[in-house]
Length: 189
Image (cartoon, rainbow, N blue to C red; front, side, top):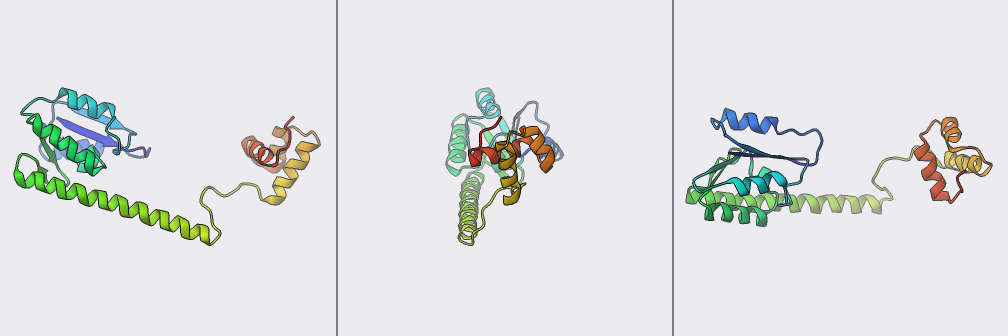
């Protein structure tokens, strides 16, 4: 059987994982899939269904260890559960087979390295955001209206012009006008 997962990114698909598993010579009778779900949680419908389905002697094939879990602790817990049930995990990307002592060791080392990579990436991201804030930059989408446009929108609203007309005059969406008015505490008519 196979377990396939893609994260919350919309441009991902399990198709390439399935093809990789089949090209490697595995033709699983059953595939369990989670789409749009992070690997940092164990409470995934496809994963839980697979864990309920498996029996002693089964082999679970994944494209990569990161597809079954993004957390070292969770991955090691899953491996222990599979081992206790007499189930082997095979990961194609890392060439790991947990039916051997070397395979189990390699999974443990790779899981620790993966967690380290996630932690370092998070640390660098936070440091970069802090440095940007210190230089006066903030993240997020740029504002559609500059300060003059916002003042004009508030003035038009205060004089009773409907939001849809303000939006048309300024060439922006109504939601932008509503946001500007809410920030400026202007009553909308």
